[in-house]
Amino acid sequence: MIWEILDDYDALSKRAASLLLDAIRATPRPVLGLPAGRTPEGMYERVVAAARSDSVSFSAVTTFNLDEYAGVARDHPGSYYAYMKRHLFDRVDLDPSRTNVPDGAPVPRLGEPASDALAAECARYEAAIKNAGSLGLTFLGLGTNGHIGFNEPGTPFDSRTRVVELAASTRMANSALFPAGKVPRLAITIGIATMLESSAIVLLASGEAKREAVARLRGNAADESFPASALWRHPNVRVLVDRSAK
Ligand code: GLP
Image 1 (cartoon, rainbow, N blue to C red):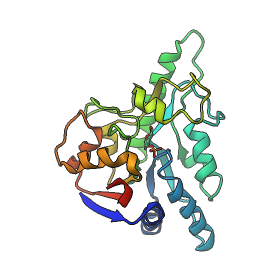
Image 2: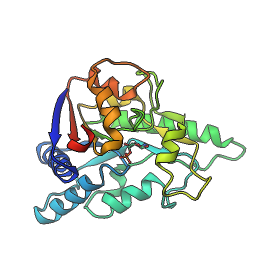
Image 3: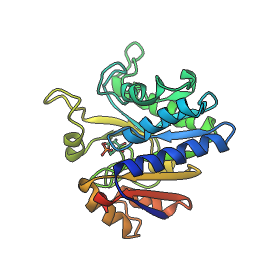
Image 4: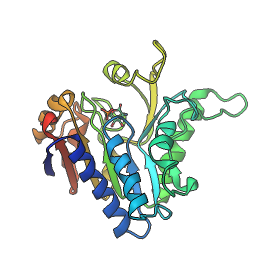
């Protein structure tokens, strides 16, 4: 695990964007794993600016998002799909058929319970990643409780894409885009095993709220009570931390 301490959020975003752009330039058909959340917003902003000024094309890029809220339709402003459209998909020349976000509100077949439709969507998503040849470079944010994607503490390291229940702290941290009392309780997330099959992983952590989680990650002990520690099992992980999170 390579640790890079950046001066501030801007420097962290710049560094993350350059790693993403380098991967696109160096790989003929890149497959990126992408996070939502506040932390990667600066990275996306810089990636979009560079794509415009340096004419970097995303036309051969495939993307897979890590997670999505369950029961939230794609056009809801709080969905991660809507987030990705705002921050990246609508702003670069990505082929919409190569952008993948789990569908948090799949339409059930006649008589099928909504939970079965969600489970089928998880299986479809895991298979789509496999068919794409697994993830290449994957970017991750870090939850204050150590979650990666929506893999909350206690998640087995051999987990795959599935429906999960969100921790109370995660629902509180993500409440801004939902009316009071309407923060989703469930989500779809790719599993830790799915993530660990990425060829390279970059974890981003910024701000004082992440300090405790960053310190625990540094502890170098893979432990299922702290999901991000699974990354110690991967041979090619870079952690970008700004000074406020260190
Ligand atoms: C959220 C998301 C993660 C994200 C993490 C950190 O709950 N499911 O994918 O990386 O928590 O979010 P933020 O960057 O907003 O702190």
